[in-house]
Length: 310
Length: 198
Image (tube, rainbow over all chains, first blue to last red; front, top):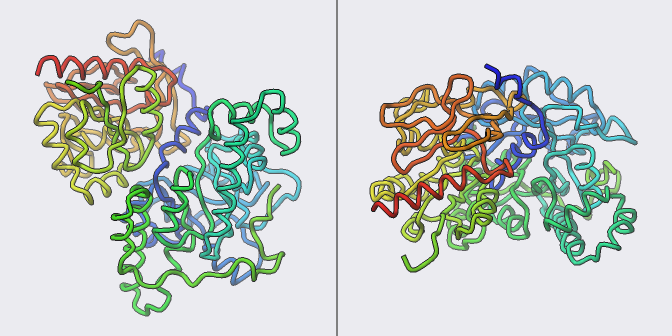
């Protein structure tokens, strides 16, 4: 059929459009097919397949890399929802491998050990869309300028402490509001000062938002944390260690599964009904122990993940 | 009707903002629907694209399937896009007739066009449009068969991609991402016509 010849893949509209479909939803870190199925059953919009959740990467140390393809295949085959996976900052070969595996979205992530200290991946070179972390507007627009189809706050992954995600989300959203008020003649200097592409600064002024969906990540552990981020103004949330590191006191695996599923479902509902205190109160009940959490200010500088990337 | 024509967007999860912007450009009022009681105060309902399993969970949790069935029984015009089209299909391949709402007599296969790297955009000819519509397919469901009551408004490579049954419209592509409001205008047209006939 002649129509086939006009079909295109990997266009910016397809990549960003896919990201738009995750809005109002929760993307959950999982390390095996069982967790992936719990996440899917709980209503996750996607799972992030990785070998160790950030809390364990933090505890165990060493170089954190892309997951084993067998492990990713196992998760891809376990669920029908989209599967995301992480590559190291700048490691475009890991990204080529994940695209070849049929992963639906790639996270170029500071949670893994950076592979390049100067350059991020040219994300326009891929048909698969990318999400990247950012701590401020300049960083967000640089990543979008490299082809990212979704932005998330970096937060401070693996801590169970939402304070850094709040800081990064507020930083981006406050700057968006400032740009909207700015006269045109100030935009170029603003772009220079923030290291941001000026055409994207102009887009933000005209539209009052980033050109791609803007999610929260890093330290979200409770339904209230998810709703907090949504009310602050993000489009959706990633939950990393917050679900499958909860209920640590439980000894039976089936008890753990039940506790994880309950927490995951509650976070999904809280993300949809983020403005409804009655729903938030109801879903917050009886979830048991959240992950323990780390006070970010007690972490030594070289253990902070959010400072990776530029 | 004393209030302006109001389109309700099922806002449990997914790309409802893009639909809101398209309808606003066409002069319709839009409201985000998160609770079933809101279905009484709208003139048409859109079930947007998103993750169908997530939306199914959230619909079940708050009693939407029965409420939407009741609204459909009183002829509320309804449009499902992508995940929304899965939710209103009579049958989902591999899942049998457990499909939630069953408003359109069709069988769909989830993700049948492939994973995200296989997502594509292509021009399709739509009944009633003079030039092709650039349709964006994202991990789209494929319509495998339709019943006799279903009117096919557009096809791509031998499969229907836009169908209508009574006052219910289904598209497996994403008109809300296309920066082309003709499908939204067509839905408003069919919704207004349905209300005029009622």
